Image 1 (tube, rainbow, N blue to C red):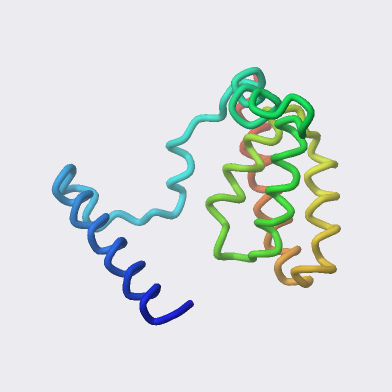
Image 2 (tube, rainbow, N blue to C red):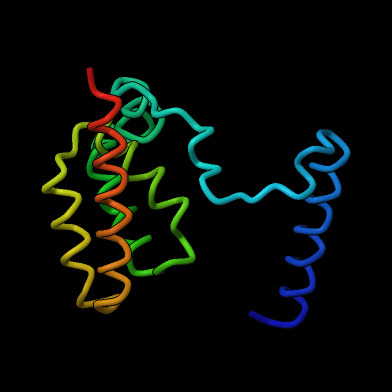
Length: 136
């Protein structure tokens, strides 16, 4: 990333923090780990509308799009942890199986390395456990 881009990004982050503090002063020292829990999992029909074939009827369905996203986030490694947690939850809601999620992550070991794959599997297992706890 260029210096100009880094400075721009730092300014955006600073402005975002100032806005958050202005809107809700209690958020000023908030730790964002687990922030993805604030975003509910959408029903399968809504996922298909927003992420599936609505805008491209001949394209990928929501389930497949989420699996592809899981692959990309796995390769990114630990920096995408909150996004990976949310995407795994959404993929399961869109109809992906736990096995499919795990297979996608395992396949990415060849591209992101074993540490990235292991971290992604740990995240997936935690999400699987959370979804089992919430199941009736």
